[in-house]
Length: 91
Image (tube, rainbow, N blue to C red; front, side, top):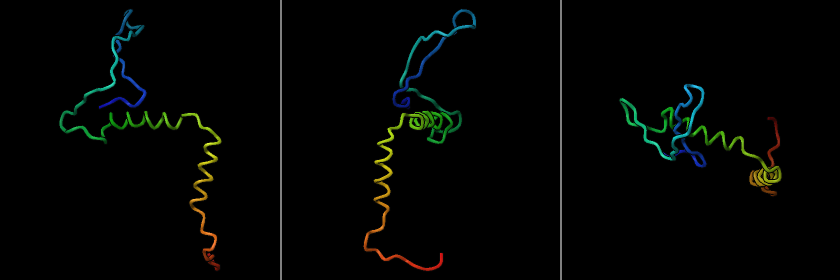
């Protein structure tokens, strides 16, 4: 399994008794297994890694001009054609 894009795992080791950690390695792929089942996309580890990507997207900077363009484009694609009949009556 690959680490999410832009992220790497770190292997840490305790130093100075129990007060500090030192990086002793890095990785961008990992292998995991379950005791009694084959790994799947619904496992907690897979979900947590997917959540990291979702969090990155949700917290990314937003360009207001780009949002305006997308809203206008979405509104234009949902608009009824000019010559479409309009229903009149009770809702």
